[in-house]
Length: 240
Image: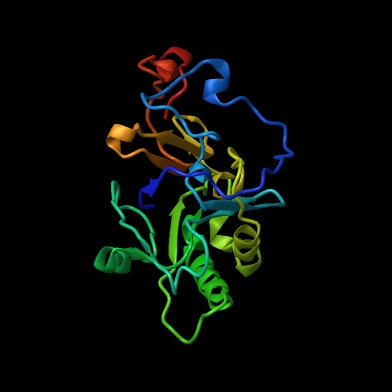
């Protein structure tokens, strides 16, 4: 849902991720794709993009969170960004899609959360936007996506509220992006394994514009895991 940006140095201050980090694919020699990564191999390699998480773990049945992507500086309502939404699977509760398709613009940050949390998250995002400098009494088109984490999360309890949304947005930063069971990826799964939040980037050569392309994913789907053509899921007997 993010536009392309010209390759540039990101304006961020490095921060430390305090949790014990598992190795990323390239750390153990798994090189996927053709083009080189950005310095962090993360969506934050795109200039001015920030990411924040809020994770909610309560009792025996709440395992969820919210992840915020702020794609540029300043007030996105007064200075919207070019954007588009492509739907690969329409079985979802995405909020704000039609206006982005109509105008080709993004006027709020993007939130990811659990399926039945999208309406509360969208309402909180609206309130956060109204608190930004330069806002008046306008309509706002919040963008909130989701995946179903109900295998481990009681999403009917609507555990994501304003507190969690404001935490993710207010803590959003550039630099390394925390991955795995955090934020909107806390309760997700993929390929019969634990899913989560993932991110990556690629830098195109100057002959193709020199753009940096960044992606952030909330993995939650079935199938059989294949890595660089190797049938990992089949060989390990782990698949949906």
